[in-house]
Length: 344
Image 1: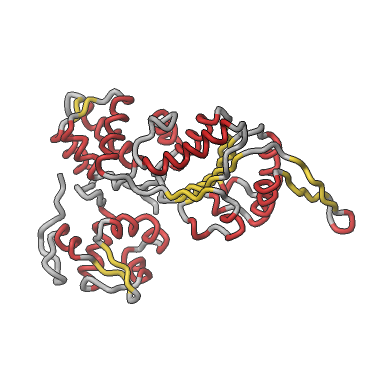
Image 2: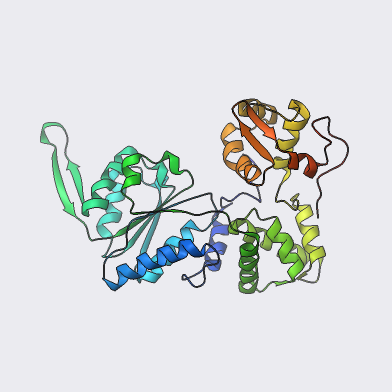
């Protein structure tokens, strides 16, 4: 998409990532939510640390913005080890990975974000590194080619992906722990917002926190982004204190309603209802009608609508759910009336 969405779980730019870094929890005690997941990781990490061994290789998978990178940094902090962070698209050649692997110290963490986007050459180099802590590096070509086995110091590979289904089976099977990071509950998002507001020194009341939490799609990154937008609005338009009324005005200006839907979400649903009688309709037809890419709709629009029951996927195509009609103020499956979705 040409326009970046405020409610997207992906980072908008490097500046936002730097701000988010200051809000990241430093250890398991500071991490809010996912208590069972945290306990499972904590037991594995503390057991490995007590044995003075590297932790098991871990694969975090789930939608963007839920804290996969934060968890990797927490594992490194709890292990007392350094973390080397990179991403799948950045590792193009085998030499790119070789330089990283040979510099890792015992029990260090190698974190690869979007690991499903590794090239086949780099992926094949990772297999022996994960299993035997050595790499088979081929030098020269043709008749002069030879393989050099290079030992590595024991390390932990932590992979993060938003599309676990795209990982090859050999790579997926080499991870000892497969950890699914799910969306957060409303109460967990409220607690995250309260913590972030304290770190950012934002004066905000409970009503405003509740409003922002409802619009955050169960995603901490979106919650923190909306908190900063609401804070900026309060500083310019109000006295700097975020009340429920101020938060409502700020969210309305961003075009975000109480279910976390933005203009594209509502346009997507209205297209299904107005143009295709509520569905079913194929995703290609929707993409053409909206002048959007299919991947954009599938990856950035549909997940939240499916999660809250506003969208249904069938073999025949997409259908608008009954709750979508009520939210948009549309009677049944007929033409839309003049009523608009409820904004704050």
